[in-house]
Image (cartoon, rainbow, N blue to C red; front, side):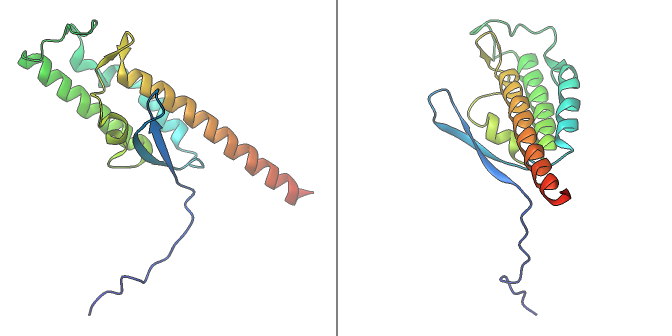
Length: 151
């Protein structure tokens, strides 16, 4: 028996497509975000606490200066690969997606130096600010609706 591809249930899960822009306003990626997901704050905090474990493979390697990385060094290449895998897993877990990390790091390696810090560090700081702002907006809207019905 053939499945009817038109047979589906559509629900509003609250998810939104969020573009990721560079400093010139150009879209470099996009991800799906659920601003009402009450678990995302806990997942973000857990990821932030685990950042040292994520970057552990990079300890003792010279990554501090732009141009100082010897990408012919197999130790460095292996360490970068392991740290990248750990970061991708953490970011994908954060957003409950198999490809969220690719949206953020598809155009630049997460451990590339930018303005004296890892690109990933800048991204994760912005993600934290974004999550906090979106969650505040949603909880204020929910509170406003609740007050209306409780009067």
